[in-house]
Length: 343
Image 1 (cartoon, rainbow, N blue to C red):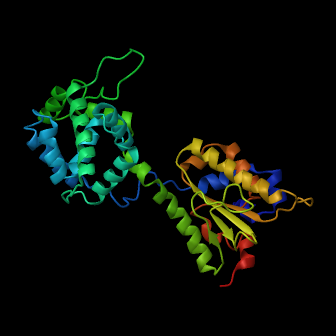
Image 2 (image 1 turned 180 degrees about the horizontal axis):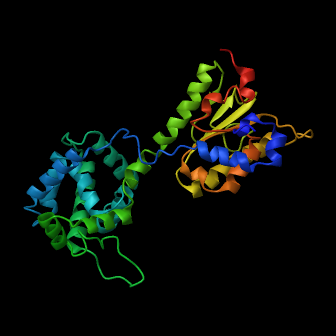
Image 3 (image 1 turned 60 degrees about the vertical axis):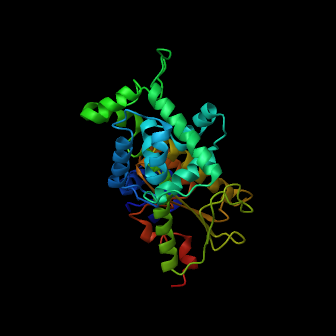
């Protein structure tokens, strides 16, 4: 019996899907240990240099005040990211608290774009307009105040975001850890709470997905197949949720392709539901039970390899046309795409 679901008639798959669920699981590739750096990635050496500048300017964190920190932030802008890392906040969270404490509104969008600008040019001194300088001052003042105050007492059933090894007791905690070094167990615990590389992983999530979409494009281009690649959140007539690819186009769809990658089983379930919905749309108004167009799923990541029931649903919704990075080269020959091949 062929191992892959796209190699057998749908009737056979429908009668006994279990071996084919196992087949797809065995072909899934997870790359969660390796991530693209993407634009704006900050190397450790750059981050560490900025940390040392901040430490020197504050005399070993003896004076964590805006008048000391702000000049460093302007001259060595990546030190702003170091300061945010000490707080343990996202750019949006920092903006919200700074606005509350400073009395001047600092929008979350401003801080997100400012943070990205800094990461793109981490060592280039800032040239600030009066408005930007005012907002940066509010951010720095709020950060200094929070770092000096440390974690306040909260209900025993809750935990404060500043209840961390380096900020729990305010500036004393920072000075202590920066002076003696951090015990490894505390570092591991901090990482456990914050998920290693979480911020960077979120920032490059689209690039991870782009790898799979690029693989689909390469296969289609190699076969000379006309296709329409949709944009994020684009509205396409006939589809309440636009598929990633439509062959040849939305005016005459013969094949639609969803390219999805996830390392989380909860997210995988949502993506399976999306693919199921495309399968339902392909059958809408078809009295013969034959779909108007073929639905293909190209998937990757360990998230899809957790729930067998979800994989069964995907196989049935696509009539077996589920491909992974290991089998994607066979996508044209083993689907309706072969009817559109020109090369």
